[in-house]
Length: 195
Image 1 (cartoon, rainbow, N blue to C red):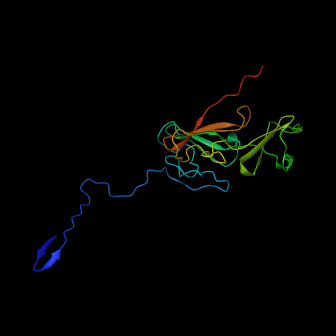
Image 2 (tube, helix red, strand yellow):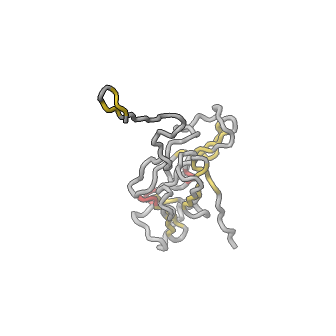
Image 3 (cartoon, rainbow, N blue to C red):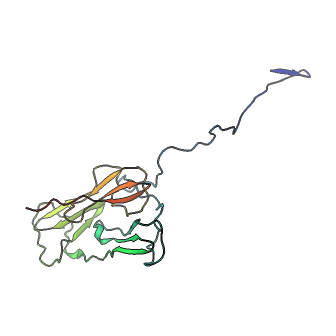
């Protein structure tokens, strides 16, 4: 405290800048919010285009795979890969006969799939998928609550690096995803060989 002309002056010295961290940036991963089941929604795509790119147009980086769609059956989503130009990996065309899907199948109950050319997936709320191969087999989202309810598309953003999410039966419509470099990537897991 200093006295100048009979007045007390309190000198306050504040340093702002000077290499000190002055922002209040969060170190928490980005958050896109949660779905109605309390599971995370996908983040914006860091590299893949938001809309399906036109086949044959130039792209970078090589090797990136992007998918589009909402089906639980990953093979029913359109998937493209960048090899200097966008190429089709999967067309995403599937024939599903919703009229053959029961309202609420019970796993283990017998079912009849004679008219189906392949083992189709019936999709229900909360990320539940069931398929018929003489009896109903159903699966839901992964046990890890950090995994989205509905499998995210390849190339959609993710927040927890290294998070591995396995959806469904690898012998049928299942697939697994890994959060790597801020985006969902496909990671294979294989169907056990039949005897």
